[in-house]
Image 1 (tube, each protein chain N blue to C red):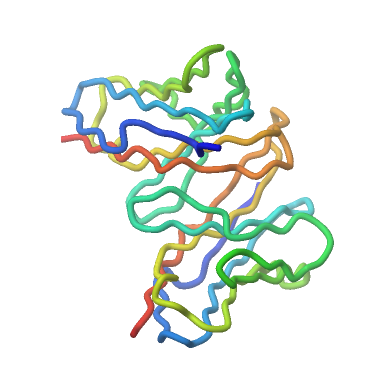
Image 2 (cartoon, rainbow over the protein chains, first blue to last red; image 1 turned 180 degrees about the horizontal axis):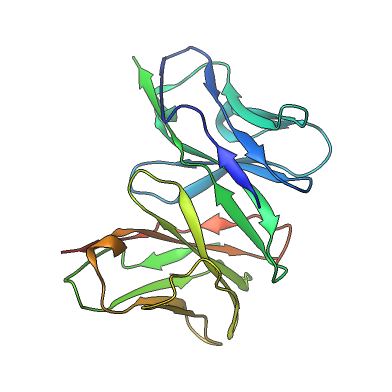
Length: 116
Length: 114
């Protein structure tokens, strides 16, 4: 069974500072990993995904994440925070069910606040 | 290309009533997923459907909840005799593939049970 742990339910950073959102996963097979962003009262938007290959993944809006198998981590970073980055961020791992379909297991989310 | 559509966006029901949530997948997507987000929690998988077939309903509560994806029309998540604990945001996602495709999410339906 897969699981995802996001450390820190709330993170605050100053505008222009580094953003680091932590995600650790548990998976019995090589994982596909995702970061989604959710703005207030909206659905989830895909930021980036890791499947295979290069372990540093670049996404939209200047975000990137690095897959570290030895640490079972997939932390999300952005060099310089912008006010528009304020949102909730979800890390997810995908797995194959007993029925052959893919389904996502999400972490509990990290709410990012940007301080002007 | 329109994204995943869900309606209504907000739904208020009294205890004991029925709630019907609709989801129209992205054009060309035949795989639909429903997830539930309880307050202060992440999304939890409920059910996966293809046209006219429920493939995986391992995340659905055993009673009162049902889902369908008919040959024509949107996917429907139906909750009978709603209780306060059903208050949550319900998200639909669609994908072009059963495995390996990205899931694209709709804006969600926020159900409030009074």
